Length: 330
Image 1 (tube, rainbow, N blue to C red):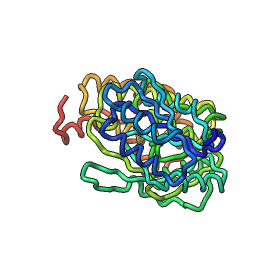
Image 2: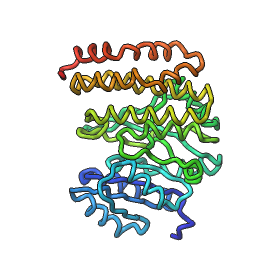
Image 3: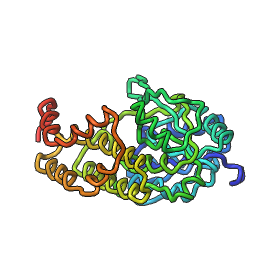
Image 4: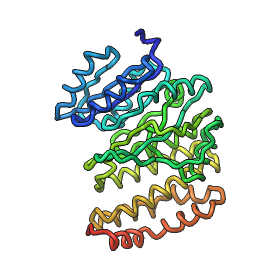
């Protein structure tokens, strides 16, 4: 297969996923769409992940392996994007897997409608092989949205999720808008996904659950530390800087709602870190002048969003309430 024939580039960061990567790669090798490349970025794995990948490379010529010292998920995705040759790009986590018809169906839909982004659904999947739908969304699957309106609908239907692996992107769109992942932080999708939607001209929703998200202990999303919360502060700063440049009240409002949701979730979870650390992070938020300025430049909020924005003004109370209701102590 020539480089020009590649329709989709799958970017697959891999770090110590030896028990999971077989199932992930099997789901890619068995795709009904054959004109794909798999870019595996081995992010300094210390187990036998790379040995498993090398075995698969024997059977699929369009597996490209990139080796780097451990730099994190964002850096691995960014380097993978630089090497991508496909018209469309999909970022897959190497401990998850996808439906074997996914890439073909999404590719055809992107081509027919000349999409920048196609968004879709998935399942939560655990060791017991129980399936739970990730997103209950009453989104019009026939409509082609501009990205801002799509983001607004997701928020209005309480269906907004930041996970980058619930989207496939036109590579040209990402490169033209210089969309890459914020490096050195956890939860990079929280920073990336709103920017991508806002900058997109044509977005469509496919409600099929193509993605299987493996819920496992020890993952970044399950394990919380001071760094998780300090990184969220950096992400909020980045999003505020992004909307500052656009000077659009509707966009300000959407980003503000996303930030309030992130903050409420963060405050609920902060009973797992030391009290002084939690209060330091809270004080950083309370003293953030840019966030206060953003709040002054938004449209009138819907009732549910107004209630949330009011609740987060009492973060220490939220932390105390969830501490009482949780067995973890400071």
